[in-house]
Image 1 (tube, one colour):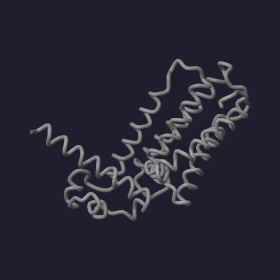
Image 2 (image 1 turned 90 degrees about the vertical axis):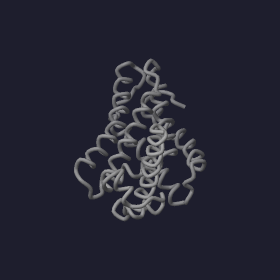
Image 3 (image 1 turned 60 degrees about the vertical axis):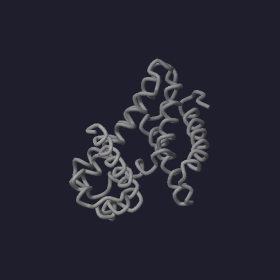
Length: 207
C-alpha cells in the first residue's frame, strides 16, 4: 500500500509540473498563479503548495527536470563516434527535444529574462551553458582531430544553430502549428538546413 501511495504522489507531482510548465511558458510565469495551476490539475491550492511551497520552487523543479533531460540527451551520443557523427547526432537531439518539449525550451529561455530570484536565473544559465559548452567542445576537438576545417568561432556557429532552431519554433507558434507532428515535419527541413550550413562553415559534409 505504501508503494502504491508513493506512486500516486509521484504521478500527482509530475502532472502538476507538466501543467505548470505549459502554463508558465504560454501565459507567463508572473501571469500564472498557484490557483490557476490547481484549477487545471485539478487539485486544491493548499495541496499544490504542500508539494511545492510556492511558484519559484515549482519553476526550480521544472528546470531540474529539463537539466536531467539534457544529460540524457548527451548520454545518447556515442562517445567513440567520429566528430562529424557526434555533431549530427547532437543537432538531431537538440531538434527532437525542441519538438517534444517545446514548452520546456520556451520556459528555459524566458527564465533568463524574467524577474525571478538570482539562483533560478543562474540555474537557467547553467542549463543553456551545458548546450553551448558541449557544442563548442565538440567543434574545437573536431578541428584539432582534423574533421573540421574552419576559422569561424565555435560560439558563432553555436549561435547559428540555436538561432535557427528558436526562429523555427517561433514560426510554428505564430502560425499556430504547435503540434508535435507539425513541429517534426518542419524540423526535418531545419535539420537539413543546419547541416548544410555547418557543412559550408566547417569544410566537411554533414548532409
